[in-house]
Length: 131
Image (cartoon, rainbow, N blue to C red; front, side, top):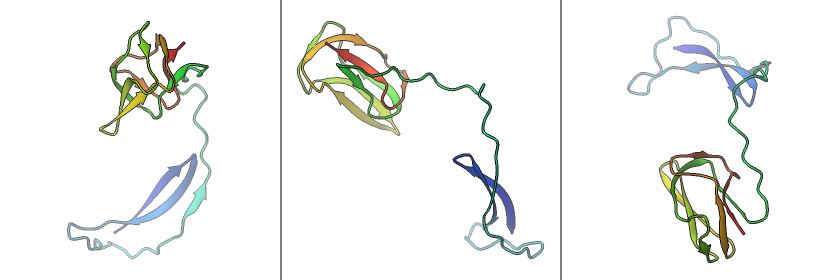
């Protein structure tokens, strides 16, 4: 059976025809034979400017340690005032059921910790500031 669907990719809408399959992976019988059409692009209005957006990540400066990916903070392994060596583990970020460890790039003292366990973070968001 053929179905006509509209798929939106990067703000561009495409009308597509898809074929449904039964449990054995065979095409479902179609009530009427419809010709298969090629992709057809249609225009889609952008979302309204008032649409809710997550807050922008804090701009990274000198001494900022940023998240390498979007995810959720599992643990913060440092505290304000703590001296850390280059390569010391500072934060653990979970994304897609995998933990990513964030390390200090240089030695310093933890001046600020901008996240807590359970916080959602974006790629490039400042996690810890070293001085």
